[in-house]
Image (tube, rainbow, N blue to C red; front, side, top):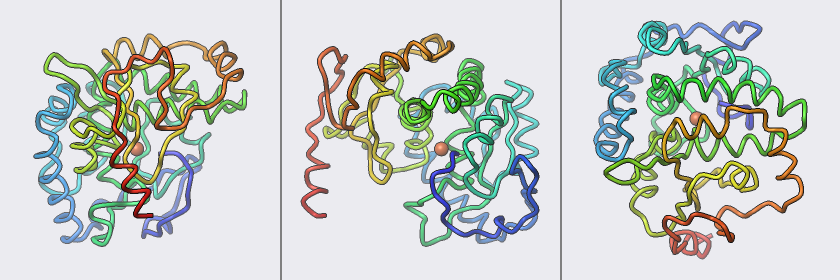
Length: 292
Ligand SMILES: [Fe+2]
């Protein structure tokens, strides 16, 4: 979670907060309705991600005992995750400031929203809740290579803030951690949390003709704008988590230098040199534009 917006209100916003913005999850305070809401979200999403989520996500779900029955207790879930990759999940009330977020990641702590979305936002929510953060993000943190990538990203965020390049780095997070696809033997699969926690985008990202799907390219991604309130117009595809880590486990100084001299790309654009896996029709987006 990064701090982009202040909405919505939830009961944890009045919880006592430590300097690093963590709070007490107070697991016993969830109502029966809230546990039931988690269960319904979970059942729906576990069905739709079968055969669409990457193998590592599905394996980690089982390994972490994620959790068809009630909102997970982050402390207990952390015990299982920490034994695998050393990552911890820490509860927060809302999006946290960038420097706090990066400090958590750099120290292998993932800040997860403690609140669950209200029933009125069952299908679409404006701010990441516990379902997005736990179902979407935590399985990948059990992958040792991705776990290292996330730590490196946190350290990269701290440097990017000093260099004034945060907008470029944020695009890397967006197009990988949130909306990334990976090639597997059976075809493209999903590892991005923003896709994995959305039933409609889980299908759209893999099966719709509308979006572009382009091979991962770090500098290219850093120049690409993104859409925050609709499906993505372009998804970037990695070959492996090892390749992602290798591309990103370095100081980005020279990459920022390259990016600075070039114009940004719109989310739907394809440019010469792209490894185009599927060129999107953009039909979905044209129709949406017509409706608006
Ligand atoms: Fe997220």
